[in-house]
Image (cartoon, rainbow, N blue to C red; front, side, top):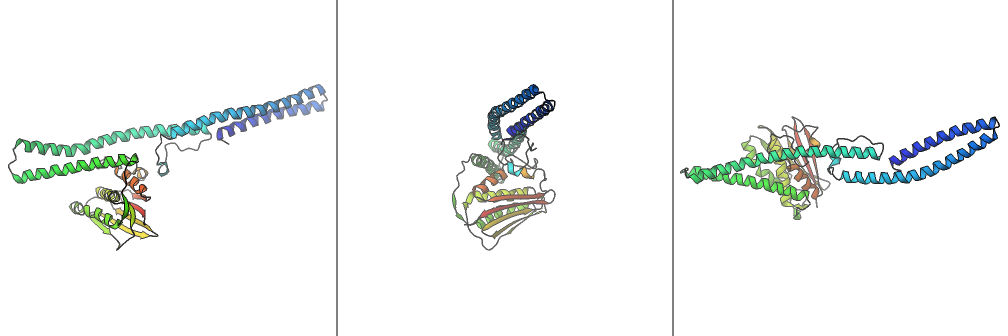
Length: 341
């Protein structure tokens, strides 16, 4: 029985019992004083009260059922506005509700809170995107205008300028591709080219991409790979993108002199790729939100806050699991589990 109907049924029953008890006391009193006229009047009144209470309970229950059904429908519609990752974090209002009306109020409160939070996140994203796009565009425009004036006669300087333009153009391409990937994943439109692949090769290539950067940033990047693991059924490019993103984050949030290790193991047909760093770590209060779209644990770092959201979607599309453990000022560990074929 729904809570609202149950509560109303209990209250109506209590009121009926109290009224019947009072009438019963008067009936007993009339019986002992031998006032037969009063006695029969009270008996008929009690029968009438019980009959009316039964009719009232039946009609009232049906009426309340219609109200509760409509409240339930409204609650379901409102819930659609809530994010889908509720199992990984705590809602603004999660107090136990005594009936469907309080449940609806709680849901509306959560939706309003999420809308306000989304507005803040959207503003932060626009600000971050503007900053990320301005830097490469300024560099490209600056060097292009310099070359256009013809003031550069030194070939080595021109070559250096062209290298910067190509580098910043590639950076812009990466930003656009990241945004498109997230848009396609969120809309369920990202095509997966599934095949049997060697996961060690993809992890190894991802580590190799960052070897030079790690040296330049004075960070120790170590790859602990086994001799062999089972193959995985997945999209080679998308899985490599996952490992590139995770390692990039590890380097980004690790200071000079720090260490990042990537380890691949296999147990019970589950392949585990574990990336650990001793960087700044993530606050416990924000850790459940790091895979949400547009969320950034640190606004001072580059990026849009969609990398881990894309990673999570790709891993889930492969039937895998991603886990993130972190302690502020001690480092972060990202674990990806994939099923072998």
